[in-house]
Length: 526
Ligand code: HEM
Image 1 (cartoon, rainbow, N blue to C red):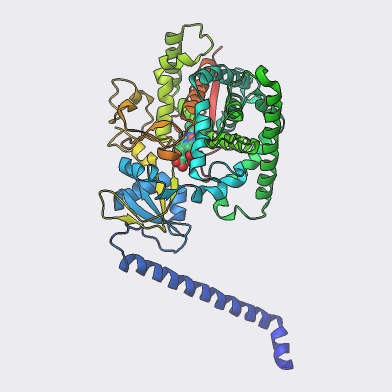
Image 2: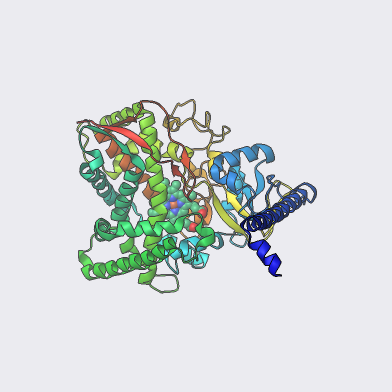
């Protein structure tokens, strides 16, 4: 024993011993992996259930196609659609995920029945710690439908009319005070600026001036901490006592308290409170069962509303500015459109003006066609779902994934689909969409939050469809159109190097956005 101990304590022997243990462990892992890969491949090749949608081939179990999907989801959908057709399954972090694309696929998933598909089982782990309890995905779907109805009803034409001067003022005063826009011309990393403009305009219009004023103090940093809860890794680690989750939880409590205190302040104002925002509307809203919406739910809905709008609108406005810098002539066309429609003195913008600015509208439409911030919409399957017109049945163990962006860039509906061409939405364009542009004749449905068009046959659904459809569409349109109109009044835009290039897309977080830095050149008109 003593001799053996002596021998092993010799440095060379120790090294040899450690190396040989290391080698054995490595061989063990490699062997295990090889067996796992072998079984996984054999299963895919030999044990196909004819009613299952085709499976995207992958070597490794659990990882499946996660990496290749995550690098560029639209490319992943396009490539696999070409290989397998409109319905196929891939493995995303161990979960069999069935994609159904095209108008029929969008309809199948987004207009799926409540007994068949479920959103909250997918999203709640991420959203509930950020928004707070009892709202959106932390309550039965019928309650969410009522909550969406309260928010949607508040967005009246009268409210929209009051929002245009608010948004205009926020945009122009931002450009005046921000150091990045000092002087005659300059270069700016645009996504950060657009994120600020989006949160200032949305909070002021939708939540009132009292909340807006708090963004200059504490709310901006707290929202940043809340945002950290939305990283993709939190689908798995939402519960973990990690630094960003602690910050998220602290921020959620603090922001909710700020809203609840503001609600009390505004109640005290009584008739003197003349603003037409959603916060005020919710303070007067009552559920069907007679219960007034509790303050904590109003606070949590306010967080949800701002978070839902922030990422999508801020990513879209950044893409818009990058597209305008890519095509400086479009900026001039937009400016001239305003001069012709509103007069050379360019009076303060009003809600009614936007109907006279079709190119201004088309910029938003076209940017959302190619750069929609939500590339994947997921639902948990609750019971086996036959896919109409196919032999496939999606088992209840699967997750469904809708990707309306696929039909939005399909040449069947959009000639020259990869070209950003806002003029395609104006009459007489050779690239005009090959789809009905008037949705008055479309089938309408009420899921409990007001009548919406079903969108069943539409290849263009950047705001989704069905019971989870966006209620912020009209606000987002107004916000984005006002931002564009004010920006082209003040600036000419171009790429820093004068080229027609554009940055790539960052798919790392839940909402896709431009890869940063994304710098553009601005030049003041006056
Ligand atoms: C360009 C801007 C926007 C885009 C592209 C967009 C897109 C979407 C999409 C695709 C959905 C459906 C998600 C799903 O089916 O799972 C959705 C839902 C929603 N959006 Fe938006 N959105 C935008 C702006 C806004 C704004 C400004 C607000 C708030 C005022 C908002 C509030 C909501 C809400 C409350 C839902 C409902 C979620 C549900 O029912 O599960 N969105 N949005």
